[in-house]
Amino acid sequence: MPPVSPIRRAGAAVSPYRRARPPESNFEDLLRPQVEYLYRLAWRFTGSVADAEDLVQDVLIKLFPRTQQLLEIERLRPWLARVLHNQYVDSVRKRARSPIVELVTGAEGEENPLDALPAAKDGPEEDAERTGQRERILRALDRLNPEQRAVVAMHDVEGYSLEELETMLETPLGTLKSRLHRARQRLRALLPMELFSAGERVEG
Amino acid sequence: MDCSEFALRLDDLLDGRLHALERKSIEEHLARCSDCRQRHEHAVALLENVRKLTPPALHPGFIDHALSRATRPTARAARPKWRPVPGMALGVALGVFLATRQDPVQAVVLTIDRPETVRLMFNSAKPLKAATLSLALPENVELVGYGGRRELSWQTDLREGGNLMQLPLVVRGATKEELVASLSHGGSSRTFRLKIEIDNAGRSGM
Image (cartoon, rainbow over all chains, first blue to last red):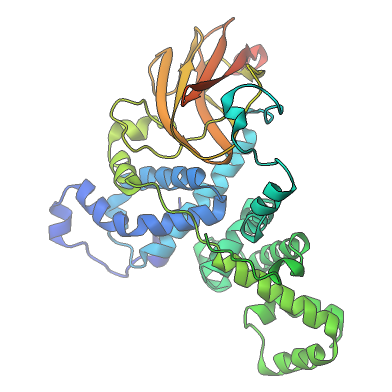
């Protein structure tokens, strides 16, 4: 959890009105307009709706006890982005340490009706449909490490400058540049130019 | 400027971080080097397309649900990623499964009294709404936050592809039975069994 100070309103005083309100009301007023933004960023980090929603939920739960501090933050969005980023990186690390059980995809030909549903790897036509440009980009992003993915999301997509990220993430500029360079290099290696010449749509 | 120098400055070019002179030098190089021109076009196209990716819409009601959970003390104490069916009309998208082999059995090693998140990854062939996930916990195994309840049930939406189920478990003593998770949807069901072994070495260190 980052300290409040770097983007704290200088000499800011919380209004007496807000001090008197229950923390739930202040928290909702502050965070409700930010949840969609947090979700969007979380999705860019994780590539999964379920994981993004979980990540946002975890961040909100962590932040509620700090409602009073939140009231004093001038630029809430970058501050929240930093909290979300840290939570994301922590969760990936914790996950890597957790015991994991992974199951394999069901064998073809089983009689259970669920197996009759179209599978992800049925045949060339289905495969071609599913491996459109969007899916290929998402898969390539999945192959970046969490720090690389985060810098692509925050810099290349959300538009934070590297200098802003240096402050927000408390990470040296050189490290950020190097992460970005490697991330882009890896993406270019995974996604050939031909993919972008076909005129396919990415929006989803 | 040569090609190796261009490769080093490509990121700065993409980010508009070059001084006028540097930029001019790069532009001159690009004008005469088709390979680097292609590299540049590739990099620009890739960035444009990454920027165009938009996330799927949030589940309806997620914002209300998430804010409400955040401000409830019980939710902060223990928070598995889903909640029992009663009272859960909307629900956050939960990790679950489909299309697994029949009754697969996997094993996981846990240390007594040490909570650990066990993750089960399953594949669903297509998105499914309101599937029912049931969990039967063996003796001496608890789901954190559910106070020793042995049988739990949830409704959940499945997305296509990999779905992750995270089970914060704590084992209180030796157990011979298996944890059984089953998923049903539209008259079909799948069962997954997890054998829980005790790490005795870990316990002595606590």
